[in-house]
Every structure is written in C-alpha cells, then in structure tokens.
Image (cartoon, rainbow, N blue to C red; front, side, top):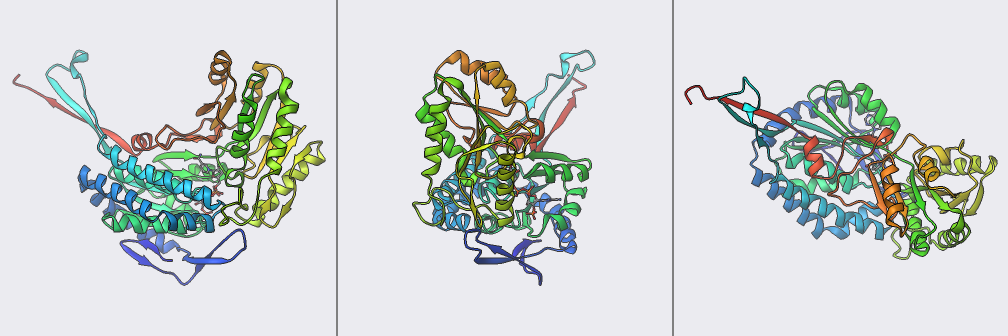
Amino acid sequence: MEMFVAGDWVDRSERIEVRDPFDDAVLDTVPAATYDDVETVLAASVDGSRVARAMTTFERSAVLGRVGDLVEERSQSFARTIAQEGSKTIREARKEVSRCVNTLRSSAEEARRICGETIPFDSFPGGEQRKGYYERMPVGVVLAITPFNDPLNLVAHKLGPAIAAGNAVILKPATVTPLSAIELTRAFLEAGLPPQVLQTITGYGSVIGDPLVSDERVRMISFTGGVEAGRHITARAGIKKIGMELGSNSPVIVWRDADLEWAVESCVSGAFWAAGQNCIGVQRIYVHRDVYDQFSAAFAARSDSYRIGDKLDEATDMGPMITEAEASRVEQWIGRAVESGATVLAGGDRSGTLVQPTVLEKVPSSVEVHCDEVFGPTVNLYPVGDLDKAIVEANSLNFGLHAAVFTRDVDTAFKIAGGLECGGVMINDSTDYRLDTMPFGGVKNSGLGREGIRFSIEEMTEPKVVCWLLRDV
Ligand code: NAP
C-alpha cells in the first residue's frame, strides 16, 4: 500500500513489511516516510487547514456520514484487515468495525452541534453597551498518532472529531498496523473529503515522530499510546494543545454480595480481550475473602477453557500478541512474578506470539505484573476483607483510566465509585466497557484530556469571542 501525502498516494524505496503476528506471513508493505516527507506533509497541512475551515458544517457532516456508510458496507473487509494485521480475533474485529461506524456517524451528528454562547458583557461595570458571543474555531492542524491495538476505531476517534470540527489532520498510524488506517483514509476520500484535509504518513515514530510533534504548524497532538512515548512527545511538543490517551493497570473490586458467575464471565473477557492488549483491560482483581476461593476457582477454570490460536477461526477466543518480542516480555514478567512468590492458577506458558491466558495469585507488589501495565493476557487475584483497604489498593498505582466494582449493594457501589481515582467506574461490568460517545480518558499517568466525539471536538477547537461596542444605543 502507499501513503497519502499532499493530495497524492505516494511510495518510497524503503518499505516496511506488515506481518500477521499469528503466522508471521507478510500481508503487505508500506512506505517508510523520510524527514523530507515530514516537511512536505507539514507544508501541505497548512493549506489543508484552510480548505477544512472553508467547508460548511453540512459538507463536513455529510462526508462523515458517507464514510460511516462505506465502512459499514465494507465491514467484512475491514474486519479481516484488523484481524490479520493485529491481534484481534475475527469476532473481536467485527465488533471494532461496528464501533467505528458508530464513531463516524456520531462525528457526523456532532459536527452540527458545535455551538458557542452569547456573553452577558454587562455583568460588570465597564461592559455596558457591549454585546457579543463566542464560537468554537478549529485549532487548524491536528496530528493524530495512533496505537496498534484498535487499528481502525481509535483512528476514527481522531479523524471523525477533527474533521467534524473543521481541522486538517496528519495521521501517523502504528507501524505494525497501518493497513486499516490506510483503508479508512481511502474511504474518506471516496466519501468526498477534499484531499488536502487528510494526510496519512507511514513510518517509524522514532524517525518521523520528533519533527512532526515539535513543529509549530501542528496546533494539536492527539496521541494514543504508551506512557513512555507519551512522555517523550509531551517533552518535545512546545506550545500546542496535547491530548494524551495512555496506558493503565485497571483494578476491579469484587465484593462478597456480587453475582459471582457474571463477575467471572465479565472479568475473564475484560482481561483477555485482544490478548490483553487493551488500555482498559482488567489487570488486578481484589476479591472479598469470603468468596475468594469460589471466585478464583471459577476464574481459573473459565480462563483454561479459552481457545487460543488462529484469529480467522470463528471458534477462537483469543489471538496472539502483536510481536514475539512483546510475548517474550510478558513471559519474562510472569517468570519474575513466580520467582518472587506468585502462584500460577491458569496458563503461564508461551509458544511464539501466543501467550496463554494467565491467572496469578500471591503476587508481590514489587513485580511488574502488579505495578506496571502488562498489556498482555495476564491477570492477578488478591483477597481483601476491608472495603477502605480495597479502595486504597485499587488506587495505589500511578494509573487511572477505568476501574470497576461488582456488588449488589447500592451503598457499597457508591462508596467504591466515589473513592476510585480514575476516568471511569463501571459498576457490575468489567473495566473493559466503553461507549464511544462517553467522555473517555484517564488521570495520573493514564492521560490528559478526554476523547469521545463531543469531548474530542471540545479539545480540537478553541473559543473565539466576538464583542460589539454599541456606541449609539
Ligand atoms: P506506542 O509504542 O506508544 O505507540 C503508539 C504510537 O506512537 C505509534 O504510532 C508509534 O509509532 C508512535 N510513536 C512511538 N514513539 C513515538 C515518538 N517518539 N514520536 C511520535 N510517535 C511515536 O504504543 P503501542 O504499543 O502502539 O500501544 C500500546 C499502548 O497504547 C498501551 O500503553 C495502551 O495502554 C495504550 N493505549 C491507550 C488507549 C487509551 O485510549 N488510553 C487506547 C489504546 C492503547 P510506531 O508504531 O512507529 O512506533
């Protein structure tokens, strides 16, 4: 495939192989953009921002609606691309495509709701005879940098709101999963988006990242990815808006009055969705002592029953990790936890990129699987007896994206929801629930700002005040 730069599909002599992480087959190649390409993209993005700003609201909304329709029409093809280039099974990939359609259609709707307000300038002395309002203006050029784990919908979460708000976009998808993003770019162009408005540049973040993020023509960086890259980008961004959707290590509290069967089912899915490569995946589960044995036995049995393997097989529950290096890292982290005293209740082994769904208990707080983001198919169980202590434990790490509680008691639910430090609390559901239109984002090292169409649009626009002095009134 080619990349889309300055209104043209272009190729480069250096190409990057895109491989299926299950069998290592080469699916396609994409250009490795150079430093010169970055300058071309940045220069073109300034023209693109003028074109985007000149589009009417109904034109932007219509394009977004048509892209939603095109993705829906091509849902089988998109699902296959997601499942082949990434870690998701075909069933998981289909869900991502249908969520992407919602994201695009919601963007089309929200484009029509970007409003300002009138301002009561005479609220204080000195404001007499003034009338005015503010409206929301596009920031200009949005640089969208996306991760591998949701290679379509997380791209739509940036392109949809940015274009709805009248911005030009430079998209840099993850190098391991650029194909879904390129197919989506093509759909935008077919839907009638002026070609100047969107550019999709492929290449290594380590090469093209710094010149893109540090350039003053970029007015906002919308980044989704790991904390390390987020920190690097933030340090180089200079004076511009920054949206950071980063990683986490999500806690769940299962109280003694919970529906245990449902809690097990929901948390197993939440822990192993996309082979655990999920920013809101379940990583730590604090279970009331009274039900710990029952919960842990059922959890381990359900995890053992997972079918792992070929992503395109409808019967597969969980696919591979994105690369063998990542799978090996997770294996080492499990090994270090076990050496430090953890017990394996299920899984624990690896073959190539396939890591078994792994359940650990007696995990010391010093090891990576407890205190870092694993981003792999492992989950830790901990017995707890005291509600306040469970909340303290849940909050004990420097992450805060989603958290969850399972209980039938309203007071317990409110107490836990109120005490958890994070961007979203799921009650009687795992941390892995997200509606694409809700405000989504984290506290602490999990991020800055919020996504979720309307909330992204807010971040991707700036208010401009217009004030009249009415001298003869
Ligand atoms: P990553 O390694 O941080 O990469 C994310 C993106 O950043 C990729 O496009 C990558 O490009 C690019 N990048 C890396 N270094 C860069 C630099 N110096 N300058 C500019 N761009 C740079 O993350 P990942 O492994 O793809 O994704 C996993 C992480 O994303 C996890 O931590 C997960 O929690 C997080 N995530 C968060 C959310 C959320 O909404 N909060 C959602 C999904 C994932 P290359 O591919 O070329 O390296």
